[in-house]
Amino acid sequence: MSLLLPDEVIREFEHCNKCGFCLPACPTYQETGLEMHSPRGRLSLVEAAWRGELAPGAGLWQALSWCIGCRACESACPSGVQYGVVLTHARRDLRRQSRRYVIQNRVTVPLLFLVTRRTWLRAALRAGRVVRTLPLPTGLKRTVALLPAEAGAAGPAEPQAPSPTGGVPVYLLGTCVMEAAYPEANRDARWLLAAAGARVLPQDTLEGCCGALHLHTGDYEGALDLARAAVRRFDATLPQESLIVTHAGGCGAMIREYARLLRDDAELASRAAHWASRVHDFATVLTSLPNRLRFRGDGATVALQNSCHLIHGMQEGVQPTALLSTVTGDRFVTLPGQDRCCGSGGVYNLNQPAMAARVLKPHLDEVRQQGVDIWIMNNPGCALQCERGVREAGLSARVMHLSSYLRERLLTVTE
Ligand code: SF4
Ligand code: SF4
Image (cartoon, rainbow, N blue to C red; front, side, top):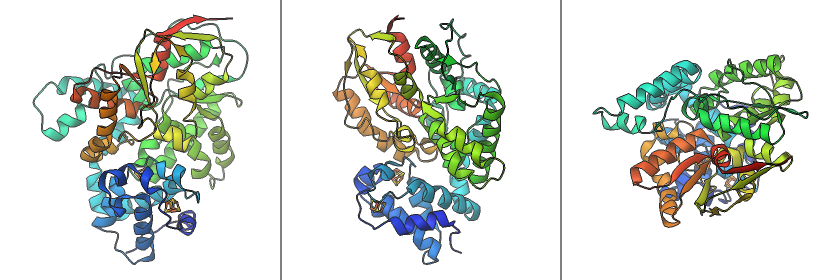
């Protein structure tokens, strides 16, 4: 049986001229040196499986399972090959026809269930904190070790934010994992946006999952259902001119994808395109507001771990650095791997823990060598991955979200 792929994937095969410029950008190629674990190799394997020249068996399954989905190859490609489109549809069809692929990804099934039920997700994170103190099998121990120290803690009360002013309404999307694992990061982001003069809309307590994790695992139909529900909810609850702000690169990139994913939906295509064009990262929106916030540090050495989907999916990877450069008093260092994948990859570090740890290792070495005190994140998955890495490597660096770091460093709000 061959892979069944739509025309938009076939077009990407035609765009690839096999030049190999994408290879140095690929973290799994860097780790293995093997063509099958490079973007070019994966494209060739998927194309061969589509042509019926290769059975979609173990080799293809392994090549696609080891792909982190970071999309660094897209930014590196001079021909503009949309590798993410190929990966999405190949995984979708593999999931449909390969029991082995489904079994390999079974560890993510409960997570996909939980992210669509936030109360349950919070409760599961709290339970995970208790369970991880018990003797556990190695695999489960590594999974629960991902939880942050305060995982699932009830969100702190919303502080008294400055009075909203005029201007474009701004809605900070809570997002499932951020809201459950790092509620303070959302609270701080909302507070800073309001302090900078944005008209921050109240949180929608019925906000749903964007579908990003479903798409990662090949549950294409599940992701589409969640995308449709999200577009309907935005239409029902947000003024049309609102900006949707995310502090989770993976979710922001997913909402950008709604325009393409729902373009054939007779009811929602134009609405999906509208909201896809209104989503931006927290750092982008904060830097676009009047420069009213003054930040001062205490001499700490600070580094950034930029989210892959923020860089390659949203093309908004430079604004976090711009924002950090406005903090006086701290020493901001650019790590060589700042814009390279940390191995989180949505659910990748659950499905492929060994490769995820290999990809993270050079980052931890850089943090140690540079004496980093505070390691800044802009995606909850990256924060979970890096926090566990820091703990296990015995490093003293604090892993903080960009919003929480800035809130802590806020000196004054000028008028
Ligand atoms: S995906 Fe792009 S960079 Fe990679 S081999 Fe094909 S054309 Fe070259
Ligand atoms: S998405 Fe990332 S891991 Fe996958 S082929 Fe592209 S660069 Fe490599």
